[in-house]
Length: 131
Image (tube, rainbow, N blue to C red):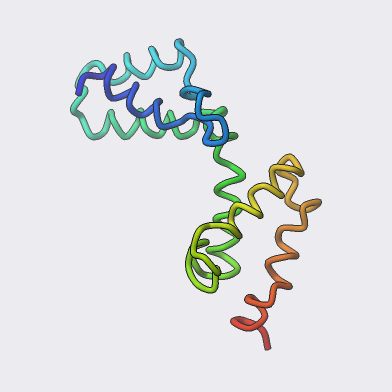
């Protein structure tokens, strides 16, 4: 891939999942800066890693992913399972989507959404890790 293709491919994957027409996270200035960073050797693993890191640390991309990652970490940390593993009734991420929607309703304020409290007092948590 050329430098432009690589950066554009990465950027294409940074759209807002709740608004599929949102486009990538990079402004044209940010995109061009990453292309310039990669231009000396577009196949360099080191340069590609630096570009990937820069893109993943982009503020807009981070904001778009923060709540999704937070809910996922609740499942990993408290329930020690994937959000679509049993005892999830239909194995369809319904519980994950419920908590993501709740967190989004509270604008990412997990305290007011009572995220941690709900996971800790859940029946599943109590059965698996309680006294």
